[in-house]
Image (cartoon, rainbow, N blue to C red; front, side, top):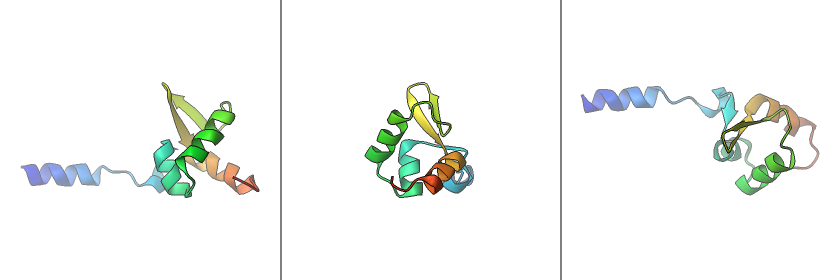
Length: 75
């Protein structure tokens, strides 16, 4: 029974490239940008389209942030 539960938990993991929103930690891993830098970007652009707040946790909309990165000359 335990082995079956482990398999179910592993199959329910959504890869980063398929997630709609990413935590700061996930975004840092996905975009290869430091967590401190990402927090700085998020908190200096609180009304940006790529930021959604889940309570006090900032989430990054992956596809929209990709467009932001594409247009940026410096991150």
